[in-house]
Length: 339
Image 1 (cartoon, rainbow, N blue to C red):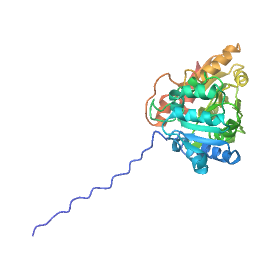
Image 2: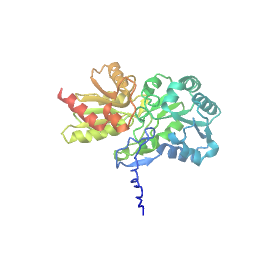
Image 3: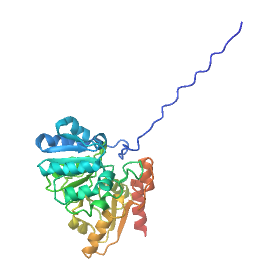
Image 4: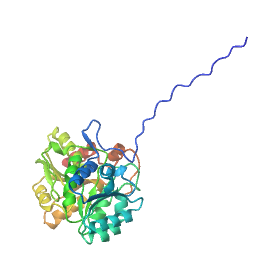
């Protein structure tokens, strides 16, 4: 009698946990977030304002415009992968009294379709709201999708209002004000599960205005976009070391609230700027120029992305590598204070 041995059954493979670099969230583990705040805010506003329309360049899901599409399908226009046509069509809609919100990735709105944004929208001063997703270092997909220079490009465009929100609160409050603004706007979109932090600071978004979120006698952090969240976290950590830190949030990059910046830089506090953007042509240079033009001779310490094409990878790793993480900010401030 011949005996046989059953073949060994391989153990089930462990499921590999993966995170899409494209849609990765910059929220901290356990942090309070709001899903798709821009999409929901636009859909709510459209209930009151029938002239609002939404457009996308085949990226509705990745710009949270799909929320608007599902709520108002008859007022949504899918333009396909044609960003120049997207902005040109939005300009035509604005010419006949509609209020378009045109969404795509920031790299495509700025690098690929700049001429259409500039001459079709900004030059005639049309009420078109360009919504740019994945601004700065909010994706790990590398230079083709990292819009690290969009502020530098668009700050030079006449007539254009540029907004860089911190969180879901900023986004929800900014949408109605952008729609009511007479001229064109560019919004650096935070999409997906967006942190919610500013409602703890008695904050209200006001287009064109900065807001002091914390007072402090040793350091002032002048920040914009998601870096305001990091500035607030850094201020709390530094407080444990008896370093008193003020935080000035600058959600509108253009027009810049120069009076608030000059006031914040008064005295002998260390002045640090924080932005999710290249160090060239963004908030740091805007603040430095504002102080120089006003005759305020102050040194400005910039915390920003380097003037280079960035690597691909996981967002936490990239933020550590390029100095945008909370720990990196704390270390930089401590170093500056000891020099």
